[in-house]
Length: 340
Image: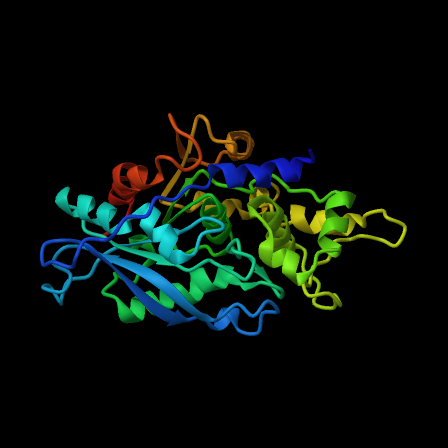
């Protein structure tokens, strides 16, 4: 099985979200509210992904009762495949905010909709999917500072995410210095370069709209990443992807070069000033996570270039302890690093 296929197929086995209901709003309880903001960065994308984005906002106890108080904000980027409602049902951000408040550390948490027509924009930028990167770093932050009682300064902003969102965390932080002061990557995907094979390119090129609509996790993930990182606005098909497939059946290396150009492991040396300027930088992953090898490869490069970070390997797989660790590790980390 090709390397890319193995990676994306493993997402399907690892992805599991258990739905739970948020508690009813109460004076002394954190709560999660679904809101909407407009993202100019997503206007005009070829997939038709809406610039009107839903967002989960988790506010701490007493938020409404203390209208003059402002709070540090942790922006959280969700993973591939599941829509925003399912992501919140799994992560339960309000429970993490409640636990932090009970420990004397109040936060706002904000999770934007990273969904796309192909189930994930990978917090990246391109004409086919749209500019999800700027949606987070520019549009979302500006909206939150204008509409929530944030402390509107980089020193009081953190960025975290799981899987696709872990990838988005490092990408957005590297390419948008001075927006977030601290970051936390959870089980990040897509750190080493991905590669399309000629067989995969042929399968994508032959795909019909009906097949794309019915595609499973692993099959569609290959399409989503290709649409995001190797787009082609002149493609006569509906996917608008540059597969690099030539008439003689060989593959133009440019397609895989474009994929590699979006790999944090490849990008890292170009963004050392941004990484070294972070107040806090944390990475964690489960010891049974199929992405462990890629995370270790990325950390070896951080070590090579002397970038300071903290790392924890914990007992778990790709998704079975994420909600727990947002509560017990992610927000305590930001309590140490964000100004209030």
